[in-house]
Image (cartoon, rainbow, N blue to C red):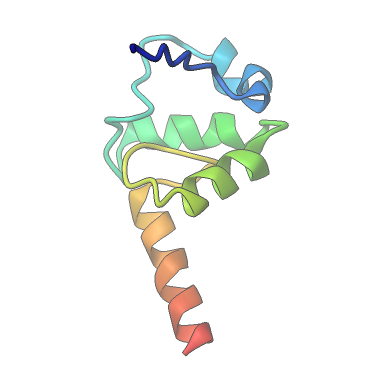
Length: 87
């Protein structure tokens, strides 16, 4: 028997500011510290779902791209700080 899996965009993502942003900006490949990342972070600052986006990335251990205004370096720093507090 074949099971069909339908992937849907989470409902919160339809409200993300990036949906109205320049389609040429690559939110996944933007290098930390680059001009592209700075532009993405500026869009994130005004996003109504920024917190949900950030929590999603942190709880799923996302390692690529910009989520909730945080790039890979920002998320890793937050994880390290959290680990130090928990220790």
